[in-house]
Amino acid sequence: MTRKEEIEARKVEIKSEVEAAEDKETVEALNEEVEALNEEAQMIENQEEIEKDAEEMEQKSSEIKEIKKVEVKNMNEEKKEVRNTKAYIDAFAEYIKSNLKNDYEMQEEERALLTTNATNGVVAVPELVDEIVKTAWEREDIMSLVRTINVQGNFQIQFEVSADGAVEHQEGYGAVDEEQLVLGIVTLTPKSIKKWISVSDEVLDMRGEAFLNYVYDELTYRIAKKCADILVGKIKNLPQSLSANGEGIYDTVSAAKINAAPAVGTVAKAFANLSDESTDITIIMNKLTHANFKEAAYANGYGVDPFEGFRVRYNNSLPAYDTATNGQVYMIVGDLNHGALANYPAGDGIDLKYDDKTLMTSDLVRILGRRYTAVEAVADRAFCLVAKPTTSA
Image (cartoon, rainbow, N blue to C red):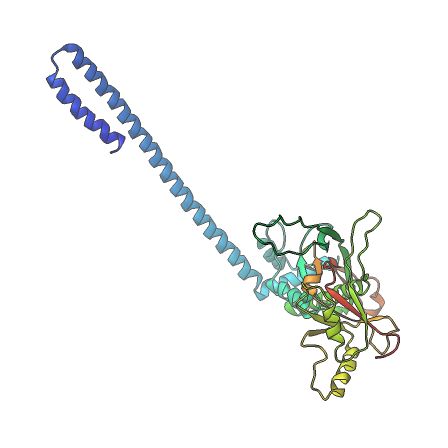
């Protein structure tokens, strides 16, 4: 029974008590109780009205919020649809040209189209450009296998230097000793990776998609390729043992290293030297070295796979086996996803800069692509370096 129902029931009881009362004082006391009950009932009704109004306001507010969400969603979808139209792509291409070249003037209708669909003053990038950049990075066989993050400034990541393994514990016996864990720290320091391309004035006359494809695809792929070269160079120069710096900090991971010529079993030996955590294996080598391994397979009647079923990626910043000097690393075997990390603090885009002076006499213009990037090896013994032995095996 609610409080209002209790009040009404009590008032009925009081009515009967008043009729049965034999003295004036009792009647007055009962009447005062009725007045108090009436006041309480009115307060309850007032509170119910307030709660009802609040509920209605909340409902209306919720409906307004949902309407706004739909409106924003529709607006964003409309902008998205607009920025993928040919007119917008053409306008964006002209916008890029106007930023690249100081004396380049956009058409007023193109500028208006970009301004109308800008968000917080930032011109929306067509999905076409996103796809060009994404595809260019995916085309780079090595960087596409590396973990990526987008963190501003220097980024530090820990790696295990040493630790006690797990032990079997029998119930009722003494407590297990606490793990002795030593960690190292690798710092990823971003640097600006740049690539110039020289194009003719005719390229600047390209419209829309053709211009964006030409510029973004070429520059992005070349920058991705340079990132791969930098990473391969850092892995190739990893030390074979861990050592602390002057401050007592382990700041560089180590890599295993073997001396072996291209042969059946060379990759297997390299794999055997990797950490247990390295499972997604990639072989990196100069394309010319591939031929040396195939010769080893031919010599065995094609019955074996010298690459042990692992993926092979090519990077010609590594020397070919035949031209490598004794002791020089010519192949890397390891887990790029586990053992390496790339940080792009400014995001996945490419910044463009224009130079129309240097090659003016040749009727060429130069476009600079730039991307802030940090790449490092971040896991210990995730890679095995294969070096040319002193005498060929």
